[in-house]
Length: 279
Length: 303
Image 1: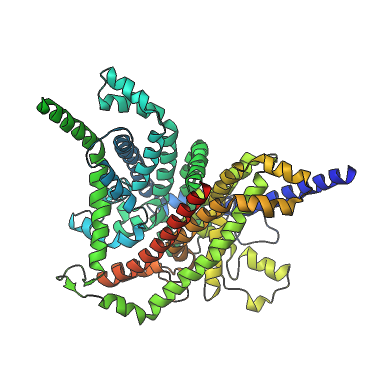
Image 2: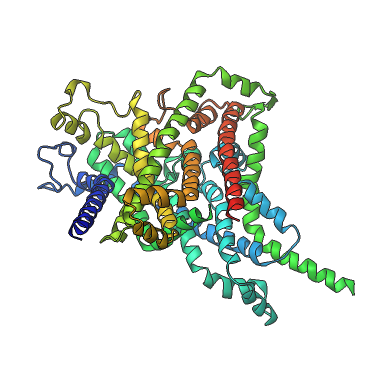
């Protein structure tokens, strides 16, 4: 008995040891980022001794970054894009998914097949022709291009359809007998029920749009149209040794996305887990 | 009698189409059409302004003699071969540890998601500092703790080591994501199996070997497929870690998507760029087809 107990304690110790090591690996880059963001460029690499918070923290890094580059404009563009894309994505894909899941109409399977067929198609394969088309529509160097690019994904329709299919049909049938129009059923019954799925889609879309780099890189050329990711990358290329400022900008760029993640993380985890189970 | 029935049908169809239209129109214009265009373009020569010229398979035969393309393909595959197994093992290990009854499980899970959610520009900037060849803490630990020769310190972001850096970074960034998929898989394993094994005197390793691993086979299959496809699409990690000031990649660090980007937006060789894109498409398609048949086979055996 005693040796079994000893073994269990040893097992637990090993588990916690692994956990602590992993937590450190995950956290160190972020701690480093925070610490370096309040240091001077000379202080950041001093390892002997390494100080987490310097005696004279350089908070001015956080104000200077707004002056060195039009950081405010970048934030404004990114927030605008993220909000509009997320809103459109939620609205149009839940709208379409409702029809695919709950309505019977001509060509339903064929239309849905069009969505399925593109699932295996990486965006990188058609990003060039997509750009050429948008350019011919006069969307080059316009924020609208990024909205068109991100707002109508097949992924959103899939996810919402999956969710709506699991809601019993009787619910809609009963409402139809009561004389409710399909639009009312969607707004009054389905939409309130789909809060979890909408939350999952929100966090996925938010994170993807906020962090997107290649899309904005292709479309947004002028300084006043740039997003935070592009702006930060530009700053890093120009002032590659202004480590304190780079880190301050990095911290600022992470705050919104981490905040949204922490608020909605339950739905994020559920979303990821369910995609795995399906496969 | 037939007429009101017909018009009711028509009305029903119209209502349904009105639901689909907002998304479908956007989807057609910005996804479907460009995809068709991509296939056509791969067989043409175009610089974006002069008339398009049909080329047949010339773009594809040109690929065989293009050393930069071959380097991009080779690097993408090597990156994939390194990242997929390492991420899989790390995320499975993490999931098994987090599936135990441990204090602060939720906190650990949240933490392991941070790298995944955090934007690449910010976290790669930190990595470039941590692995800085002359000033970075990683190399200074190599010198001061492990007695590494200060003259021969590893150059993490150039030459042959750049792929290693990309792989290490990717494992760090993605393991939390796949860990959640594994956690869901682990929670689907019946605890009775483990109890029965305990009665038979099975140790931790045997439980893993004969219960956990086989029970997770479909999860592992899915994780490997997803990881492989995502690795094929690598672009920004390479550009941020290895790219110079203007983001250009050399032969030792170039990847397929970068080559697509470079050929199109720097050289305006649009047809050729699309031919490279087709190679990427065939790679992803192959993995998808394997997944499709693997899944179908599994469903047959489950029945």
